[in-house]
Length: 421
Image 1 (cartoon, rainbow, N blue to C red):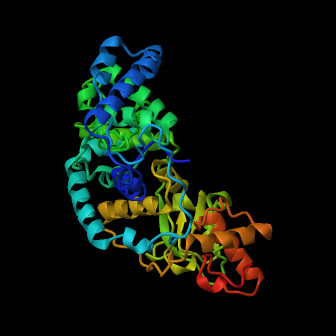
Image 2: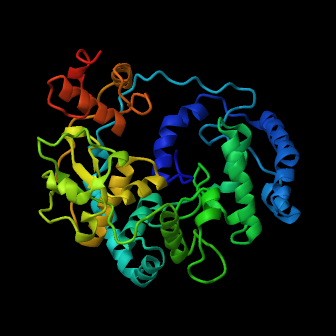
C-alpha cells in the first residue's frame, strides 16, 4: 500500500499513464461548463460543507475555501459526470523500461552537487534534525531533492481546487474526498490560508509533497514561528520529512544499505524483507561490499535483507530496514535506491552503482503474468500476479530455476517462456 505522499517525479510518471483519461474526452466549455460548475458547487454545499463542519471546520474557512469553485478539467483522471471510467488496458506493454534510465548519471551528478551545497548551507538545521529524529541529513536532503527539486519546483495548482475536483469527478472519489476534508482542517488550523495551499496535480503539498492526511500527521513547526509551513520554511520542510521517516520506523545509527557482490554459489532466491538475516551471516556466506570496505560494526548483529531488483542482471544489495522505511515515502525499490545513492553522493561524494543494469524489463507484462501463473500452479508464492517481477516473483523464479537444473538468474527472460509452463 502506498504512503499518503505523491512526489512530483512520481506524479509526472503517473500523469503519462493516466493522461489519456483527460485527453480522450471533450472538455466542456461555455454554458455546458457553467452547468457542470453549478452542479459541482451544489454538491460541495450538500456533501462537503456539512462533513467538514462535523470535522471542526468553521463557516468562515468553508466560505474562503469552497466558494465559487470550477471543475479543473485539465487534471488527469477526471471524468465528465455520467461518463464511464476507461476500461483497464490489457497487460501487453513492456514490464518497465530499463532501470538504467531511472538512474541518469547526468541528473544524479547535478542533484548531488546541489544537494551538497544546500546541505552545507543548512548544516546547523540538519544537525538539529538528526539529533531530534535520528534520520541522517543526507537522506532528508536526498528526498527533498527528489520530491521538489530542493523546494524549487513550481507548485502550480490550488490543492483545494484539485482535491474538490477529484472528490467530485475522478475514479477515486472517496480517497480524494477524505484528503479534501483534511485539507480544510489544515486551512482551519491557520498554518496556511486556502489561497496559498499550493501543490501538485495530485493534491500533494509543499516541498515534501505530503498529501493533506500526511501533513496532519507528520508536518512540524521546526523554525518556531508557530506555523507548520512546508511551502516556504526550509527547516519546517526538512524536519517534516525526517519526522515522517522517524514515525514510520527509521532506525537510528543505521544506513539504508550497501551495494554488494553475491558469489555464484549463494542463491539469489533469498531476497526479501521477510528473509532477513544478521548482516554478519550474509558476510559469512561470502557476500562483500563492492567498495571493498567491511560492513559497519553496528550493522553486523542487526538485520539485513538481500535485494536483487534485476536479479543477476544488475546491481546487488544488502539493505537495512531503513530501506523499507524510504519505500513508505514512495513504494518503489528503484525510488528507494535512487534516494540511497543520491544521499551517498551528497554525504561521501560516492559515484554510481558499480554493477551495470542489464537488458531487463523488455518482456511483455502478459508474458511475465503467464510465468507467474505457472509458478503459482506449481505452489510458489509470487505475491500479486500482475505481470511485474516483484521480489516474491524473482525469488520464486530463482528457486524454480535451481530445482530444474538451470542457473538461477532470479529474473524473467524470454528463454524461460517455453520452459516454464
